[in-house]
Structures are given as structure tokens and as C-alpha cells.
Length: 231
Image 1: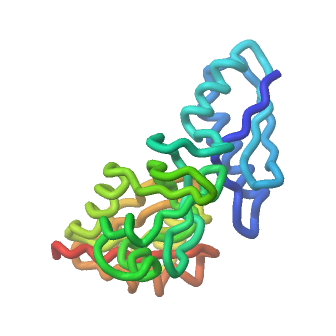
Image 2: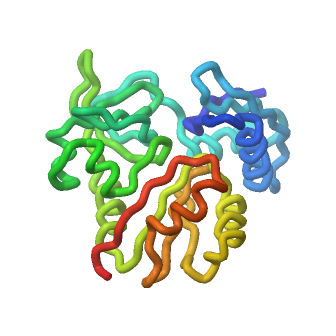
């Protein structure tokens, strides 16, 4: 039997639903392996897997590479996966297993403005997965976003269409909300960013804020809007 804790964060009001969704996804990922697994949630809200069977080690490696593991400490120069936690006056807070700050100086790569303004402009909301590089690891952990991460965000802004970021909702819940509000033909696709984090890619003539106003009341989610500047 092997136990592993992954960087998959369980959050929101309906934790059981989220754990159930994760279970279904993982069952699908491990369907060709000889392994049984159970999911539990740690006190820090990470997902823990208990794996048992012939392929438990292969499965553990697969899940670790897929979902990452929470860091216990951070080393300068190393790259970590984490998720956006909060946007303060002077920094973005990222959780990689331990809280890490991306301070104003490092946020200049996103243009000018306060952290909250930058978050708003790029449609950034809590729980979106991110990749960071640690630049200082004394009492305060400091980091910068990797070039790969910044390129993704800039590609959103430079796109010809708006995007709406959504957390705490499944792809099918988002699809259903879009369909019920009659916006099916206004949407190009739903990009998966994380387990319950997505980006709705609007069509050329569709207004992102309008989509938020329409589907927002149907989803118990936080949402962000990125206005594509290439229209």
C-alpha cells in the first residue's frame, strides 16, 4: 500500500463533489492498471491517495507527475507548480505547499498597475494553477512567474477574442450554464486549466463581461475576464 499527497487542492463549498469528480477522473487515468485507490482530504485541503495493488507504484508515479506534490520547503532557482491564492496590495500570493510571494517588482512583467489591477486585467482568480521560480528562500519566500506562465497570460491578452476564467466548476456545469442562457453559439471552446478551473474562449463578436453577467448567477464560481486586444 502506498499513500501520496498531491498538489490537487480541494476547495469551495462542495468538497465532497469535488473529491468525487477527482475520483472519476483518476479512475479513468488508472483504468488500465491493476490498482485500487481511495481519496481523502488532508487538513491542509490537499488530495491524498491511498493506492493498493500490483501497479500501485506505477500509479503513484503517474499521479505525482500529473498532479504534483506540495512542497515542504522551496529552493532558490527551482521551478514549482502551485496555484494562485490571493492578490494583496504589494504581491500575488501563490501556494506551492507553502505560501510564496510574487512581489510588485516581479509583477512588472505583466505591465504597470497594482497586483489587484493586474489580476483583473489578466482574468486571474484564486485557484488557477501556475508555475513559478523561487528567487529567494530566507524567512520570506519570493518568486517570479516562469516565462512559460507569462507567455500563456500574454497570449490571452493578445488574442482576438475575450476569455472568461472560472474556478470551482466542472466543464459540464459550465457547458450547461452556457446552453441554458442561450450562449452556445457565442463560445468557441472551454479550455481546461486545472481540475475545476477553466477558461471559456469567446467567439470574435462575443463580449466576455456579457457572458459573466449571463452565466455568473448559475455557477457558484469566481470569474475573471480577459479582454482580447486584437479585435
